[in-house]
Amino acid sequence: MPPYAVRLARIDDAEAIRRIYNREVTRSTATFDLVPRTTEDQARWMADHSGAYAAVVAVDGATGSVVGFASLSPYRTRPGYSTTVEDSVYVDAGHRGKGVGLALLSEIVTVAETSGFHALMARISGSSEASLAMHRSCGFELVGIEREVGRKFGRWLDVSLMQRML
Image 1 (cartoon, rainbow, N blue to C red):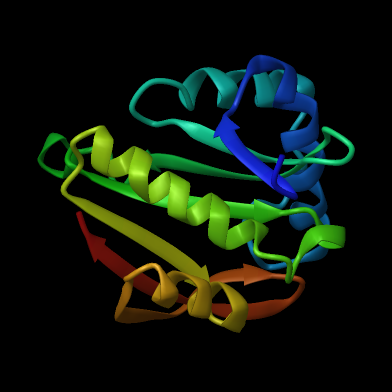
Image 2: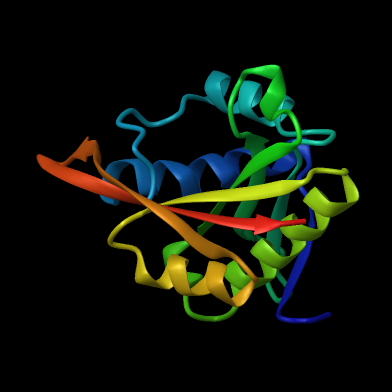
C-alpha cells in the first residue's frame, strides 16, 4: 500500500474530517468559518458531499487513519452556475508537506471531470502560498484577487481566485 491511499469518503470518516476541519476553523485562515462544526453539522456536510459533489479522503497506509480530505461544492446557487464547482482541500497538520494535499487535489480534479463539470474554482486565503503552489501544479491559473473580503482573528483577508477548465 502506498504511504497514503485516496478514496471516496464514507460515513465512518465523518469524525476525522470534522476534527481536521475544526482545527482549521479555530487556528487558521484556511476557512472563513468562525464556529467549529458540530456532529450534526458534519452529518449534513457528509450528506451534501456525496454524488457529484463528492468528498475524498487520504488514508495513512501505516495507521489507516484519515489524514486529509478534499471536496467539491457548488460554486454559486443560481442555476446558470451549475456546471462550475469549487474545491476545498484540508490536510492534518502532522501530514503537511508530504504530498497528501496534492494527491487529494489531483483526485478531486478527476472526480470533477468524471462528473461532467466544466470549470473548477479554488478560493484561497491570500496568505496560503502552499495552497496557491499546489493548485498551480494541478493546472489552475490565478484569475483574480478579492481584496479584504474576509475577516478573521481581527484581520482583513484577501482571497485568491484560481480556475481550472475541465
